[in-house]
Image (tube, rainbow, N blue to C red; front, side, top):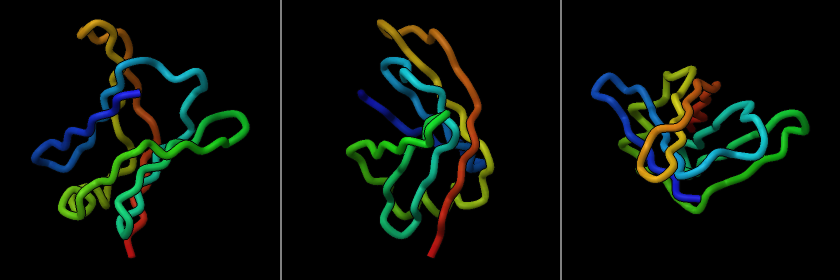
Length: 91
């Protein structure tokens, strides 16, 4: 799955995905020390870490966010979107 992150000048995060997940997302957690992102899914709280690392500068911009937007695209067109809980764990 291809996931990209966009951050507004105000520090709001938007994640874009090239397809929808099979399970509902409970939350997205960003570890500010390592830059890793973890998706936690309902109902069993299964975790998944995409193969990417977020730069420290972006982590600092996102540290106070409570939610993030996720947009799902197919053939370059937005097909769905949602807001999910977002937690940034800073050292």
